[in-house]
Image (tube, rainbow, N blue to C red):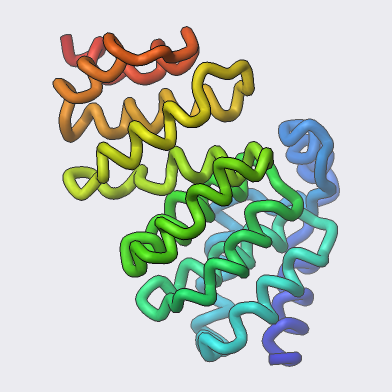
Length: 225
């Protein structure tokens, strides 16, 4: 494990770009420092790292993610998420604790959206009892990133979307003025409109949504019209 993490450090530092780093940090409102490694290069780094060293055993996931989240540079958190995504078939109920920490620490949309839609979405589909336990806690937490996650974790579900749950979670957070919540509501509805446009049209006509949520929800339907 130590060798794997040392190799990660070496390869990331060797690809650091001091010219790109300030631009990338500025795009993220200077919330985090960057090494200056853009997404295509970062993804290749991860692919090569796993190819050269093998994927560590699942028991190592928490150690890897913790290591990446303790690093200041944003690329480490991206790599940590990418590694977690390689264990989707091996997820266990206890992983919800790790994913919750990933959502609530160093939070911004660039990490939260992947964690919610890919990691949490998969975990909740595998263990609906964990979903039903956690969602009320997340909604009442006052943490906007946990709340956003309750709206978007079904983004990839398509015809397996639980519309009763989607409606319940949206209405629990509406009406509100929080941009990231309202944007998430529109995003989730827009994505589901590709599967069931009639349901989304009915929902947007009958429920109290922010103007932002309403516009975002109907974008795909309006384009099709």
